[in-house]
Image 1 (cartoon, one colour):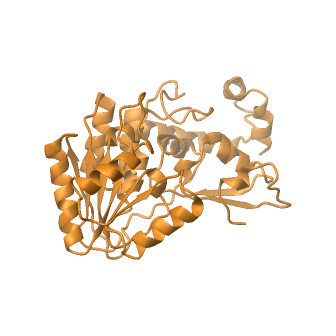
Image 2: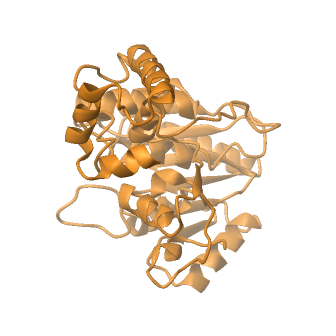
Length: 322
């Protein structure tokens, strides 16, 4: 069965679920992934993503996940030039000048905004307003389309088809274009209020361009209000490697709880801190595996079993049976 989040619903039942493949795993919450696993009797689980979240990196250290990496870029792709520019007329001029130049060269581009409509409570760019403004300002004379989640399904498909077929030069959108969009002719990504997006989202959005080979650009337009937001943008400008960005995200946001549901923040490690102490934690994992191989029920290591029992409570018996 291939499906969307609809497979999480109670009505979706399986008789003998043996394998769960979760694509774009960063778009699923902790509980959602647990629901999928719970639809079978301890099924094998494969999670895939180009942008691991901090908690995933931590779970690799703990031994909850094993890692397989595909480090090579697809054939014909070049790294994308990423630039952070001020949210000012001068900063935007640089981004939109590049975009117009690419359109003149028969290429296409995206402009992504965090909101669909304007809001009195949130000071951020809205796709509907930018669509109207750009049509009479920086991108006047170009063929511009609008795409967001509040459009009807057939309207969304119609706009996307026009863009894919080259009948639109620029697509102004929200994060609905974050995944599943493959337009090899698109070479410029402009992200407004980039400081409002997480590293995973920014990396995914950037991945919408540069899919047809040749030089591509990503412009992060922002005035970061916090040191953390500034660190995220600096990390994006410094690397196009999703694994390095995951490590940066881990350092900026923290790993969250491995024995809980938080996907960021302070870790539940008592003595170590990720990523600073990653080597030490990996060595501890190796030693722990050796102990469990020799003493699966920790019958010879009663003090250690008591510590694990304090941590896991009633689940400890199931753990040792497994």
